[in-house]
Image (cartoon, rainbow, N blue to C red):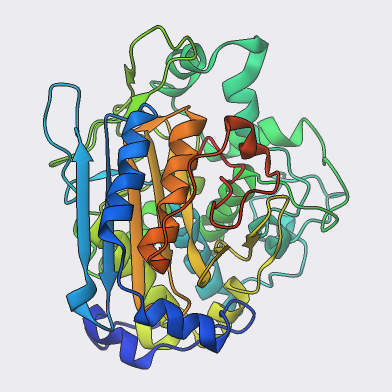
Length: 419
């Protein structure tokens, strides 16, 4: 299904973007965001804290589509432990940023009348995928409010093994079918009454990828390529699951060992089948900028309608202060207003991709280390100076990852600390 094609270059989208109901900041906050130049020195200082916390390297790519003179790019540290300097143009695993792409596919199907987001999801999946007694809907799954157990917990924590051991035994080389990932979740039963709470679950987005395949008769990878990658000319973006390698120039990812006295583990090569449509995309900073800018432009961006964008950005509170979630879009409240996007943490890689609600400024933050809460917190803190020209406070203790209230200019790290 190709409903529409891009009608203008992404560089001109900002002039025609549609503000998002329920996700837009106040007018004064938007003006503050638009007027503020990125605080380059504060951004670099924040990135330095990322590296000091244990990542080999980090970068920030800031694009202002309303005023390109405010564009900034800053990279520090190393792209690999051989000493190659960090390069913000290279490719990397984007983890849960994939959820934004999956949501676009599902919303396009909803626009065609092929899926109703508020009817039982089981009706849009291969027979037997979900129990007949499960009333969960696509909307609940996309909002992380379906009560679906996150299958990644079973893969990473089974038998009490350490994260690095689990990676080598069950993640790096194993190839899982999506239905088998869902089965791991189903056997745990619903965790709470659907719609009654927020609990981040990657399995919900595996279900949405399966629904897209079932309703179209096309592989998920082909849907991504034909409906998003090719129309937007995302030439550095791919979904190659279960291919283990990353083609072309790429940044090496490192998994922090649970025993901090041991060296970082090169985790670049992995099948990514264990996260599939919840986190398997490989991309670049420039492509993530192009995608998010087009997405927030609604019908002008050629991906989804304005109505679908409003649904995606209709956020609800999460268990973490200052962070809300819609349909594959996360909203974070900064000192100068709200930003929309997503983050992703997958073995070896951390990315935060956010934009002002009008899409005029995008920020892509990256570090090539995972399993390190201090790196996560420091990377999140870089959002503040990138958008607001105001440095974030020093990283909070690692327990801040639980969502306890932080000081006014520290962005709490989100709870999906795996992907």
